[in-house]
Image (tube, rainbow, N blue to C red):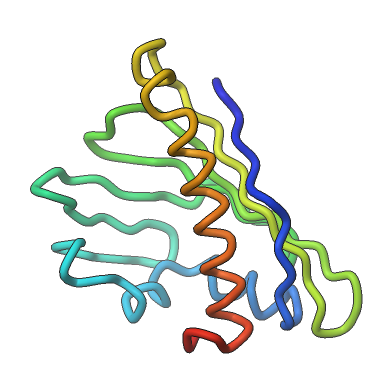
Length: 138
């Protein structure tokens, strides 16, 4: 498995608030871009959806209260992966977050996606930080 780690971002919230949001897929439905994702369905532990007609989803594998949530990709995915959110509260209303992705890809996929996966992970971390810090309305 190839490992990708996002940059660490600061979020001006309690780790508990961030953890609570990301540990329940039912809360995600309000954030789903309906122009890019179809058929979004969720329970607390699992969500499924379609992107360009391809069915896929995520399942929560593990939760460590207020510090980590681990997800696994499910469905017809181009590669297997595990993804987790790590949280560390450094002071009241000051939490550091980073994203970790472990992907099992063949050599061709690895060559094609290496830079894109790192860039996407860093961008996703920044978007989450901006949303929770009130810049985009989370």
